[in-house]
Amino acid sequence: MLALAGIATVAALGLGLLRAFDPMGDEWQCSDGEAPAGNDCYPVDEPLPAGVRWDPLGNRPMSYNCDKDGWTLIEQDGGDQQDCLNDHLPLPAGWHRVD
Image (tube, rainbow, N blue to C red; front, side, top):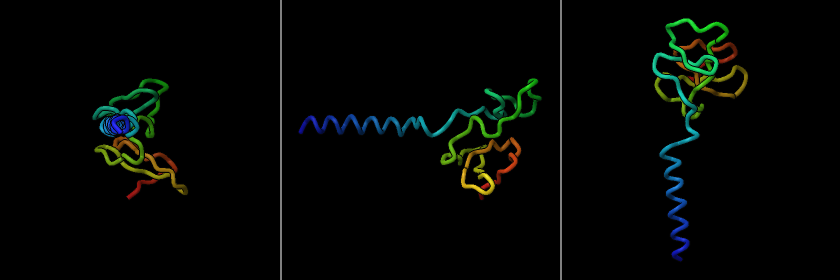
């Protein structure tokens, strides 16, 4: 009986830590005033380096966690794929905002 209590306690602590730190809840995000481009974040009010393009669907929260400030839930036209878009970037072709 004591062994079962110990196993349950360890499992509960493990699940509590995962919920607290939420390792799957977000991808990393750019800082305020920055947006993803290529494999990095760049200030939205400065030109990008040569050969780098804005990546409106990169470095974003997961679609189920898109209610964070600075992000808008979008959906692919004619489909049910949803994703998050940084509010500083234009809506990509073939996508629309979810109200």
